[in-house]
Image (cartoon, rainbow, N blue to C red; front, top):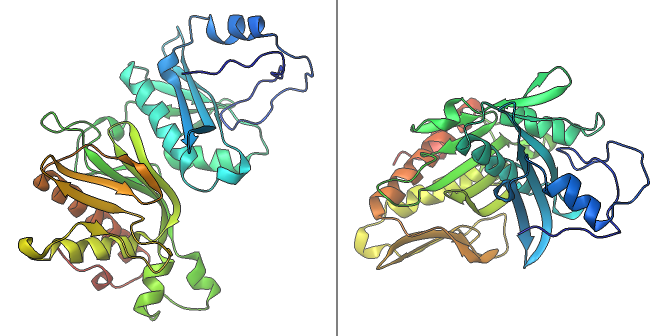
Length: 312
């Protein structure tokens, strides 16, 4: 679905960061917009990603395909109130997947020079500078199956494709750190357990294939990993559905894992209508184990004792 602006659409070129690149104040008519943006060989409606909040559109990412063989990230835009929640990286991951599915060797874009946030996000995702543009190498480890993939700063746990006909639930995160610990004047090796669990944060995305089920910035990934280890360690007959009871959230269930006769689904109380497709227990356990291993490795790299997250 794509909403086509009418006479109120500004005639500006918004790049990957959604900021204006021109100073024109002329307005498109609907006909001009359709002719210049949609009725072109490079337009593909499948390259349009919309981010919705309670049914209202809050973000958009548009990717086009070009005869030279590369894909181009036309824009990735969000209003200020929705930034910092991992939505832009989630939309960009879908754009990368779209480009890869069409065999494009590169995904290119360019930015307003003052938009440090967008430039930093794309560099963390793996974009490199290329004669005034940024480009992402599609032919990279993200196209391969493996235990854990690194996508720039992202840790993607599990394969990016389906397993035995099932959609694969995937946990991905980036920007892991603990900036609040420094502000508290504490050190990783001596900070109390509860403080470490709250302060080790990252931008978390949970996906079902190409569908983003949950995206949350500054999420307590160490606390989640520890809680998942405890849940898996319960006896089968005593194990209820998983409801993440975090010290960082007032409500229980920011991450939920619910079982049924069809299998296990992952969701969030913040997105009650969004769930992963059901998967078997072995698939779920494998994905959780990979997530826990990745977080544990990053915890050690931050200077924290690995025992913060017990072995499975």
